[in-house]
Image 1 (cartoon, rainbow, N blue to C red):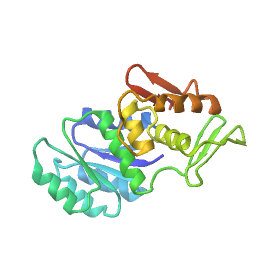
Image 2: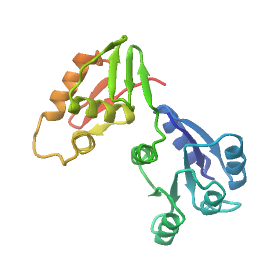
Image 3: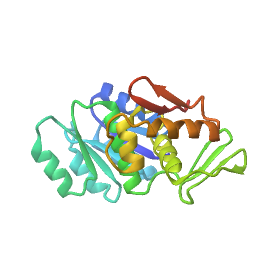
Amino acid sequence: MARILVLEDERAINDLIALNLRMVGHTAEQAMTGRDAITLAGREPFDLLILDVMLPDSDGFSVYEKLKGTPAIFVTALGETADKVKGFECGADDYIVKPFEMTELLLRVEAVLRRTQKNEPHYRLGGLDIDFNARTVSLNGKPVDLTMQEYALLETLVRNRNIALSRQRLMKEAWGFSFMGESRTVDVHVQRLRKKLDLNDHIATIYRFGYRFEETP
């Protein structure tokens, strides 16, 4: 997974973001000031920056200028349109407005990592091994033949692990189109993945909502 820097001067928010990033498998380093963030980044490069715009010693834009080349999501105050515009003008990959749902931030993180190709090339869980570059799956060392759609659904679930995803979201991400009516397409494909890959204990059903791929950190 990715190494992510969280720069946020409100300790409670900083801790909450870092906790949720770690829960889905990322490494999260925390900074409360721009100076601390630059120091941390100088020791080892990050795959993604989450930068609060308003800081006690500087601002997120100044920090980003010093760390250019690293993908960034800016955190802005509600209604601060000028911050959003400035963020995109200086090269930000995305922004999120306070207050925000943690699920939304995690989804934005995964989206930026996918676009910037900073996500992991492999994923392993027990005997399950997924090669994202080759788009191959094996279980206990033996290749598993998945259809194109089964693989797309599996990758969506795994890359967003520990996040509850609605059927609508899964249809959009794995099928590429909006959910229509009462289609059981997602349910049928989930059942196939559970059976083929022995994932009954890892793909949880969220009642009347969707599914979550569960991994204990």
